Length: 214
Image (cartoon, rainbow, N blue to C red; front, side):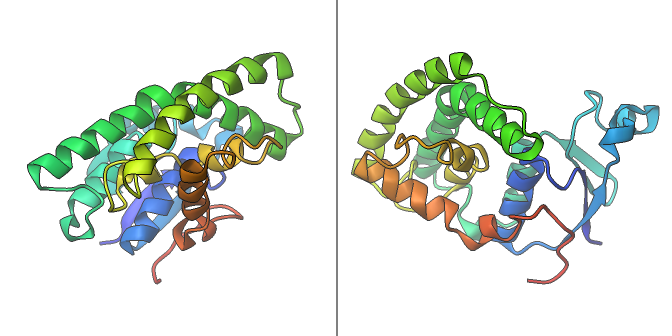
């Protein structure tokens, strides 16, 4: 059976998940959740996702939520992709990079990206007094990224992994706010440009849709 992704097509986390599916060439059906009418807060939805958020995945009755967990689950079913390395040392570097994304990038980059995404989609202008300090913190974080990416092509080595792809979609929105934060360092700029140019990311520019064939 085809994987069913219960989600909102324009959600940032939905797009992260769909991007990984596209990388893996895994067919999936998008089941659009009517969030405007609070369909994600109904008892039926909360039974599957107790926090009332999207997306969640239904794989023949097996339910998993949180976008990163969904991605890891599906990538683990296709170990040949290399998106989750299996060699112990390579896997340790992968787990290290995943931790960097979640603890170093997400707290600032995620907030910036979400604010700018909201600005783009709803017209609510991001508060400069909030964004500027976050940008300063992220800029310091990217100094570390520059060192890492000066040693190898990606965050966990010379092979693309989920650790890199997890930065999407917020990475792209951070780079759209007029700053040179993602392009002023050569190694970060190379990595950033490659990620936002990947076909898997560009496939859902207008929103995620069911993808049964690639």
